[in-house]
Length: 452
Ligand code: TRP
Image (tube, rainbow, N blue to C red; front, side):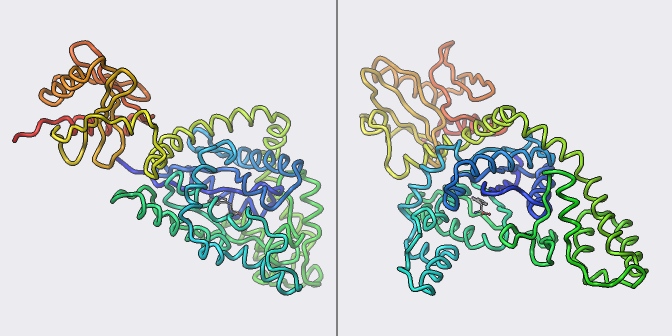
């Protein structure tokens, strides 16, 4: 079974994406998702946006704009699981389970929270003035985003590295407390793309909404042109040699041009190309590269219900992973059904199974059932209901003593049949044939008779 690398990242939905967001995060993420070995989870971190913004209109507009930007930029939703964080109720639930193991001292050290405290202290305010529990717990919600899907790689900006480390910390603590040797959570790694340029803005500082120096991405060609005309350059006149390596206009050009175009531009600047002409070329380049995507963007923005449909499909895919996993986590911490667990009346301690797998019988109302658990505790099979314990025991025995049962499988799961009767069914939702077949194999192993 090949394991693909699970790449997960979220975008906080508070603003309108600009050229810097596109080149620095969106474009590389879309490219990475095209790798056959990548299993990408990309989402709109709209719960996170509530921490920073209390303007509902803006939140809603930003969610739509960011969704449209990813889709217009060529994200293939059939390859990628693309969803809104707020469509996944398992995430806030996991956030709580993690909140209960996260050390307060760890969160005290989070940069964003500390910066707010420091600012308050500087201005002589109460240290916690204006600080919400949302801001304080921000890293726990982010840990839930990451751990819920067992991401291996998390592409983020440098300012987010600490949060990924906190996710590791919190996940490790949960594993330690409740895993009983099983690693529930994969340890994620922050992925900082060194090769991806942080684009400079109009004034040469990092392009950022907070510096008000951005170049708009998809609003209109005219807006883009206007912004480009405001790029700060030195005062050399046309005909005078320019220094390409000290020009952020050239840096912007390089982020979108091919090798030959870059060389040509470099030569022309050295030969005295005027800044006005250089700006025209940059505009032309961006318009060529992004013009079609801009049209797609406006088309998408005019049909929000199409985007809604796509995102709901994404949410369904994400929940097919999150739901069964959260169920296991709930069980691990002791949030278990009374019916299926506390009424265990016969523990088949003597039932012989291989490699630590277990068969557990229990009573449910008037009937009797059993589960087959894999060595890691996950449930492979849940039996049908039997009228008496003897019958259930006989079926277990029959399953174990012969390998003559049949397994029928469909897309989502499988069932076990003895003499034309369905005696048990898989309960997890398997995402693909590979995972399902691995579970079937595990069932066969668990039911292999052992010689005394
Ligand atoms: N905090 C991230 C940011 O502001 C957004 C985010 C939320 C995120 N959850 C995440 C990024 C999970 C990566 C993984 O940039």
